Length: 212
Ligand SMILES: [Zn+2]
Image (cartoon, rainbow, N blue to C red; front, side, top):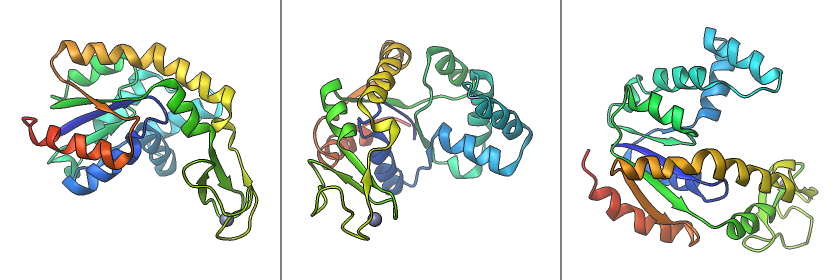
């Protein structure tokens, strides 16, 4: 089963992709992981990605697509895969459609206020990396890690301004993909404002009904 997971940052698609991937034996493919892997392995594409990232530029579509294409040719994708965070733009979706037939694009719907509440409440331990949430998973003592007593802090990309910026980019670039996949009869909506468990309960029968 070849799936695409779409959703704003904080919609929970990564967590859900990981759960469904484990259940169904499908690898979760994210471009962030592919970039890191290519850089680490020092492949020709990896060296190009490294230079681009060091200059603080965006990896161009052509290079991203080449990495995804190579990844989707590996044997562990024989039963399918979950693309998490790719495609991000319509040109990327068009490039993907040129070499892969997709069975479904799942849209994890989540309003801006919910995303902001989820992401801005995140706190991370400076010492051990444990993750907390001021509402959903608060530490026993405010600002202090339960596990190691380390100091909890807000990572830069979870600051309000940064979250709003990521949401704006998502709405501008990625949201048009929803219409693109809907027009091809491939789009399925999941309510992602509910808990991960509830979203999974909604998603499982939907996937069971997909033809692959
Ligand atoms: Zn800690």
